[in-house]
Image (cartoon, rainbow, N blue to C red; front, side, top):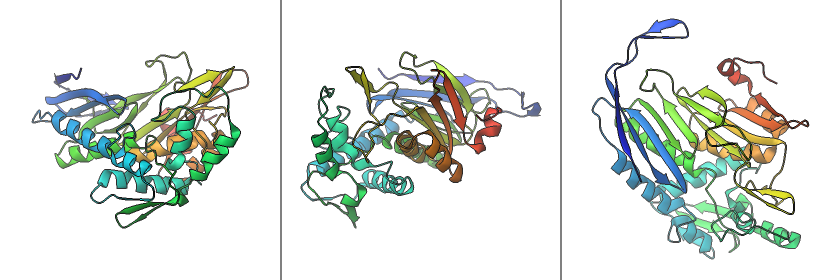
Length: 344
């Protein structure tokens, strides 16, 4: 059940980093909650007019999912996935936006992020088809499905989206939550809202200050199978940027002692298994953070650290397993001051 809570907190002058500054006073904060994309959304924002945007946000999320959700048979992406060769996507801005952003990250990541991996995601039991663990791996079937994977098999010509083979399908699940957050951000900016935290299923974007007048703080979960949703590895300030985290420690199954996670490597066709347990990516927009968090889980720790340190618009925080079973952390140079610790 959706809940709406209005928080009105009188904020006073406080201390931040040992320097006094004037914090906002008497600014009403609203908290909106609901369900979308198989998960939750939680949005907190301050508005001097106490406007409630839940109806607009709910309508947007419905429209958005009608374009990009593979779980809706009539959605634009489902229509494309079932089409033989082409689909007219005129006026479908959310679908086109997800497609274009996906192609950009695909190219930048050397193909590690690939939304055409959908046939393999379904094969391994993590897609829109009935969830059935693979009890006996058929390598020939995996190789056969790889023929339908690759962004070179999809082309947008004007408003017409082409597929080179009828079995090619798209999956925006690794970018859609972040993209939706960015759209809600734009709604707030258009309405003059300057203090907000938007969270969809653990992906977040923040700007300004919370009701206490402090920079928004979010947590990065402990990447363990038995860890609860409130078990936090570390908390981090989110100052006018986004964060998205990807990992295999919750969405997986085990067959005959072998664990299969939902991060499918498009190059091999198999679930990727490395010592990297979770990748948290910081970026200005959440779609970028969302997509790269998935790409880094495919690339592994060493390659991801190399790429993240080279890309000026990204920062990343990696949690990985050490040989002794302990959790270790590495993060990019741009996060040194934020975490105030020595990078491993």
